[in-house]
Length: 408
Image 1 (tube, helix red, strand yellow):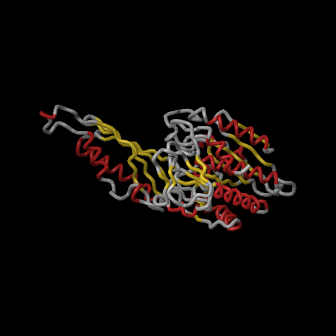
Image 2 (tube, helix red, strand yellow; image 1 turned 30 degrees about the vertical axis):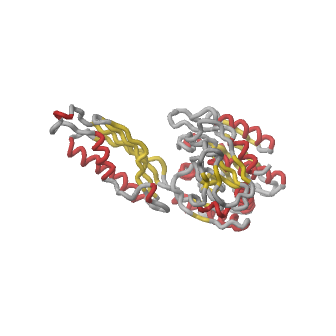
Image 3 (cartoon, helix red, strand yellow; image 1 turned 120 degrees about the vertical axis):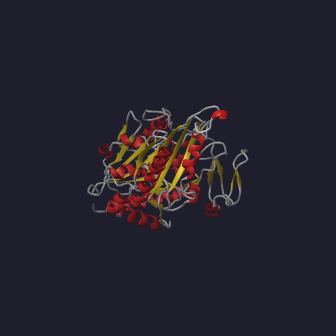
């Protein structure tokens, strides 16, 4: 079965996470896909299959005889999707021999255009899989799942020699809560890769340092006719907080290694207001400076308006795995070689986000990220090509071959 055929089957099963939940998995629907994958793994000859109560699915391919001393290589993808644009069933649209031009997304009125996504020109002639413009596609990360399953099928059917192979499919990556329950000992890999990136050939091992920050602003609400020297308008203080942040350090204004502050939610009235930010930076020092700047703003406003007027809570979320992967740089060098073997140009670039791999790396399992070939995640413009998925499968097969003779 082709990887894209698996993708079409998997995206038909809605698996949105639920950020309001305090359970793992955050949504029971993730078990629907996990159970299907468990059955498929059994048919493909995967052994040591475990589906846990928290919706982690593990399995292994034992080493080919004579390759038992090769390092155990892991591949990981996540089951959940974002919850946005998931109000109804996903209906993927297949466009064969895509012409590289504007493509209407069903009857939604949305246009997938190379003016917005320049890489579409390079997909001319491909079989393009898109949404109908009303949902996400779910290639994040069901494309990764499909490619891993297709890898397993090829290793088995083509009798490709390999060392120990470990696979895992995980819940709640999109809300960052699931991976804390990942059983590294049960997974039992020496090294691993997440398949959760974008363009095929992308290799990523530098992710953001990340924190969330919330401001609770306590104003004083009185009748505006008698408010002189009494009213403290919480909404105006919220505006003052945001105005003290660097104007061009937002997601819209930054790229590459540039960090940002991102106001993701604001609500309030004269008496009280609440603001939620995320803070991102690849550099550890700059990351700390950003947090300190928010603390300084809160201190200044409390000095001006009274102690307790502004409450700030900062919570670190994850850290840059660069320092871990650089100690195991063979993971990137070997992945680059695997790309070149199948005609892909390797592109080592920073992740402007985070992955399960950064958490796992800091827990002792070095785990950079490989691109799946998908684009425009988390919205109705999400798309992928069948040929891109085939290239990724070919690349990870070559990666398995490299590690079959690699010495730890």
